[in-house]
Image 1 (cartoon, one colour):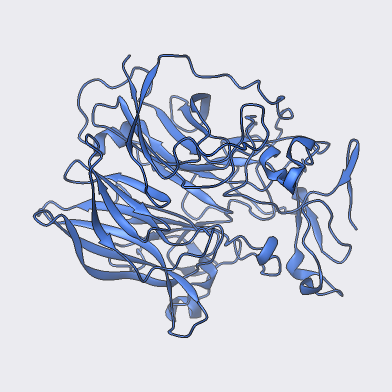
Image 2: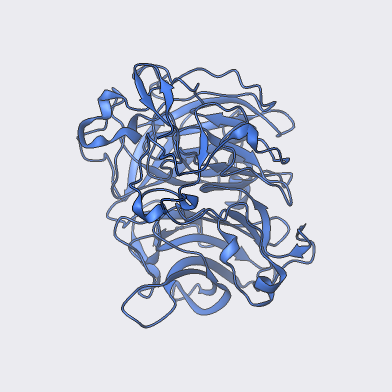
Length: 496
């Protein structure tokens, strides 16, 4: 076995969990690569939000894993329900609900990250309103599910308050039970941007599947509409599904791929100047905030966070030899001798470094905290926070038809939800928008926060929560209580 010393215990750093596995501590880092970070503060040392800064109102409950919420043209909140397999209209005032679209053919695996996912709304000058929706589906009629992901365009009927007349944008993209990412945005350039995760490969039930996050599509694959290499990518598409003529040329091939080398990017937001921000879930360490640059390589799985050789190595289980991978038992703490291992500095290609990280720790960090020993829920105590969405305050208000002056000091900020961390953060950007100036906890609860949308006046933040899943309690251990507000839309309103 490969082992790396961890103080009183002996473990090894390997590819670990992401979307649903987080810790609760916040650390920063230096994008120069010479990060001067510290280990996670002891549980209970988080700075709580100032009391009385906002009021809380539960708008709607009983939603089945709400995933994406956007402001519809009717002023209502349009919500995709991942496991509910539909798009729901929620009146933000009364909480009244109606179904905009039902997708019973969507595939959702029990406890998985597939289902009805991304949503973007387009309002055309001619008056038409279109909704772009991504969801998992089965590609054949046999009992065994062969899941793929598609994006379809639907037309909105304001009189009937329904979405109808589906038109395929793209189909046959990767899908699975883990790391779907699936954030869908309509850019200021009129293009669709979509994140696809690495499918949770190289761990657990997907241990023996190789990572394609760094693999670029070939000309033959693009011509044949084979999107296998789209795992671990950000895509940029024309609204009819074709490849934009100004997309990057990567290894001599132009495809939908805009950036690559991603693990599980669930946050995507445009700034007012068109800067595209993304947040990405790390394994045990190094959740990231990135600025997405055309054609950029973001390093995964060779690098997690900065290329600093701290607390992460790339253990490629799928390449185990001479013992084949399917004869091994995956472990988060020990790497068999037959599994190839690479340090981050072994990867010498240029890559785009994050502008900020969370949960960056030194190599002697103990990932087996006894607080999480019961049930082996180690991941709850890991320092990652698992960011799950992004919303730029200024552009979100503008898309909602901004009124009033908004909240002072928020205009150049991103709001970020997290899962097991149970926290909504405000990420203040530097003056030029290219760096992170400060990170503030806005809301801390025993909820798994999934996505957000602002009101037009910028004083109300509407937040969607997961229906189930583990979360930390105030001591930093796995909570034994039910989630505060499972499967809900909550309004947090600031009065000053």
